[in-house]
Image 1 (tube, rainbow, N blue to C red):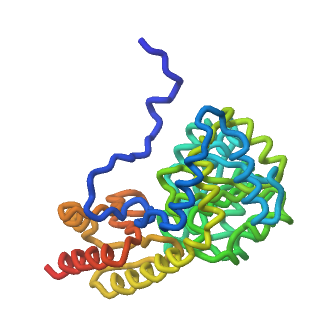
Image 2 (cartoon, one colour; image 1 turned 120 degrees about the horizontal axis):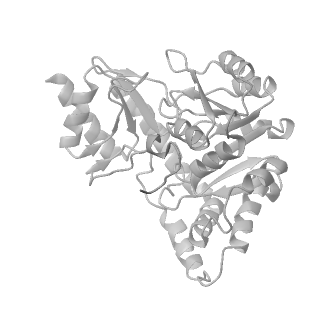
Length: 353
């Protein structure tokens, strides 16, 4: 009999099974590939990659570029395979037996999984009934439980809720634990609400970002964290050598250099989000929650049946079924305008039957 690690069989998993969708709006991805001018420069750069060498200079070049854009040193930057890996390693670095990790609920479902994998005690803190963040409640839970790490997703996934910087500052000012701000969707919110503004005065603060959402690099898997150099040095020990491949690093480096090329797309996604929110709000029985992301969370009593209808039409969205606090909720990513029009048409047809 194979002797697996204790409790491995009890570990929950994250379902990434997919099908061939006609319209795919279930994973908060960008439905546009790279801008042609970015793709052209990237192809030229990839043609000069030394495939026979381990990653080295490319990794530091991206760190230096991100550091320069954020007025810090490269020692404050850590790169990884998406911000999800950053989160996993932080849970490992601050987790362990008798260590507690705090996070909101509902929020990114991997927090609970990563806490369990790190053999830490996960401490969920319920959001308000309208999915807004209660800073005072979160601080009290962090201090009462003497947590090693507290995590806040801003804007929050899957609710889409944005948290004002004043609330983040309140949490940072009133906790002593490591505080991670998962800002995977911040480009769709506002730079004024980013915890990056607090990094110079809060040594316990960590900000995680990704290239997967606003910059459309979900296939490449690159993310980064910005934090005090001592935190970066400690968490870096949890990674294997050469953990980020050159192809991903070079791609992210070119995209970050040319990130202004993505500004129109981000603005378009925000505009489409607002248009879809208004249209869905006008449908009988729909509750559309305020969103600062590239997706919408909606509540509808016939959500399961609606999801089945959309699936039959080749449209993939995220249905939460009877999940706690998300019963009869659907998460709809923002696609291209023509895709959004088709989604709205099918939903409207369903509600009028």
